Image (tube, rainbow, N blue to C red; front, side, top):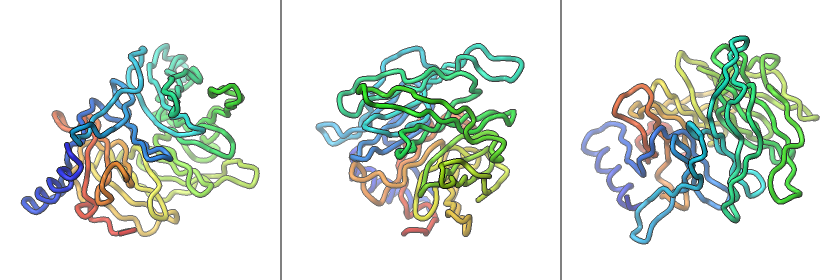
Amino acid sequence: MKPIGIVWQLMLAALLSGCFQTQTVVPLTAAENIRKTADGRIFVSGRPAVYEIILDAQGDYQKVAVTQPDGCSYYGGLAELQDWLFFVCNNSKSLSVKDFKFANAGRLMAYSLRDGQVVTVAQLTGFQLANGLDALPDENAILIADEDFLAHGGVSKFSLNFDAGIPAVTGFQPRWIGKEQAVYAANGVRVLNGDVYLTDIGFVKKVTLDAEGNPQRAQILYRSATVLDDLAPWCDGVLVADYLMGKLIYVPSDGQPVQKSRGGLFSPSAVLPDATPLFDESVLLVTETFGVSPGKGNQLAAVKWTDLGINACQ
């Protein structure tokens, strides 16, 4: 699909139907996460691989795999740190009946944004569902969420060193954020203005870090009887994918006023509010996984901002 074609088709669909429309950028089985790097490159993850979204010689959007088949069941969260794109390779094995954690939950891996090499950073053990990622740049650390549906999850922290030219683990804090901070099943995690924002089943929570970088008790910014997935910084807060209800939700940093988009998305898993310069500024991107609507989703989708019904920052 050509960039101008996406914009015009979205406008035409909205005019003809009067309802919330999406346009397929690329099909992607079990699309999971999306991230734009500091230099404007866009990457998405899904069941088969981690892909970079590019424009081909004809001006159409294409997905190019940056990973090779390596025993991963699917690929999850994405985060950038020190010219590396970190991602989760999920391959859950050896479930413990004692705590329902996996001894082999997959791997934390990284793709070099400079030369394209892919390395394994750490084996993931003691996770039920390793999910969202983000970075603490000042600490050279990667945060990884554990969405434990028995309420024993949270956010773990890997401290890293890059002196050898590739990321090496120097420290690991399991459940760095957990029940002591009133977080139990984190999915998406993002660092914004020195605070950690996360989704926790049907909650959006903010965890403030003290002067020593220690997480404090979580503040609830939003709650609903739904399942929330990933989130992304936007305006003075975060834009959240409501997986179950098929909506996007804007949650300010103080929790008020929350704004919800119209419905129309199919199991949205992640959102990229600013997709420029690869896409027009009038468009945002959403990954739709397979989820609750058979035959729907499985794509990276473009959405017109004007169709959402969210007015913040516009």
